[in-house]
Image (tube, rainbow over all chains, first blue to last red; front, top):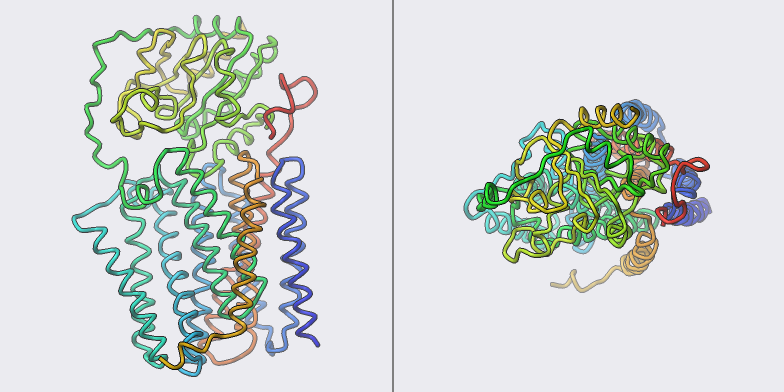
Length: 458
Length: 112
């Protein structure tokens, strides 16, 4: 009887989770949606606490208390720029939990499980272990604890694939010999190692794809845990998470015009000693002073800011918003054009601008803003480079050829705020800088914005 | 080969649930606004803390000492995700504000 009741709890929380995620279709309904999801989680937890197997609540209480004590500070105090690391770290915690439960199941039942169940446990623990270390690595690279540079060596892909084959081979072997504990723990070791290897060749700027992919793995791990414990709510949420992460990683790949295989095995941004600086010297660049820039902005009818991760790094988003405020006071229309891969995780730039009190109606994604550029008077590019490089459209053979870009060159004037003429992540020169309509405003982004605000107020 | 051919009936039912939930997920997630992709990730991260329900049982059932210990660690990790994930999602969503009257040029367009 109590078992049936528990299933109803789970069914209800599954419904609440789906409704919660649906709320995220608009910022207006998002918080209410999350409240529903929280309610769903609470129901599932209360239901599980009534599970007939539980005889002792001490360890449970300790775990809940400790987890809360760690989770709350991790959510409240970290800066918004560090949200990608936090997310990656959370994926690793979730995966660790799943793989530990899998190990415990195998330890408890061992050979009594039968081949199919052992196979399920094997897959669950494999996914959990590799997501655990993979996410830790990703978090480390994002935080800068580990070098963000892609690490490659000869035969890397062959080596990785053979480890993958080794793990799968061990799982199949376990299905025929469920009592072979050594094989099981060897597989766990290999999976833990494999997670590290998987992230080594991936550069920091490819992290949007990787975090989304790890999100997907974490979901699949959860679903596998549901299969293992025959628990439907875990299967449902795991499947939801898995598809969410997968959709996001596909979107990110598309935004860079690269295939998933290329991101995972291509080690992009490595030593791209392309003929950079080829254009330099041939065409003159035009510089502009703060006063002239302020004059242009102040007399414009519409201005679009195009921020890149460089803006976030120098925490210039608040200063950008101050410039925007002054402009709005002069009844200039202000918008922000945001490329999907600006930032270190999907949607990151939107969060950073929202934090700087930019209203979300002013945030436009690429498809929405590209048609608006021809009617825009001034575009201000702050800390973005590759995502506004027209070479992506024109220069066949360029590493970023085919990547959808923000077509800022269609605006009447483009002001580029930049420290120097250094190349972007892809290591290629940006022909936008030499365009007829382009004016370069050299200097630190934050500084420049402060000076612009002052000049505009005069 | 004998054992492998016996397909678990429970697993097949689970497979149905998994595949259908995947389709549902695809539909729901496709509609999420690109504005909110970061909170989407922290929200799915919080929800994936559902591994807590499995961990609770292992930590509290007293199967054996090793299982209890592993269960305790798993409960801790999952709780971090649930509590931290929902808290930070709400913190992020709170920042997404509509512009006040007259603040933005054209309102409804950007929020699709």
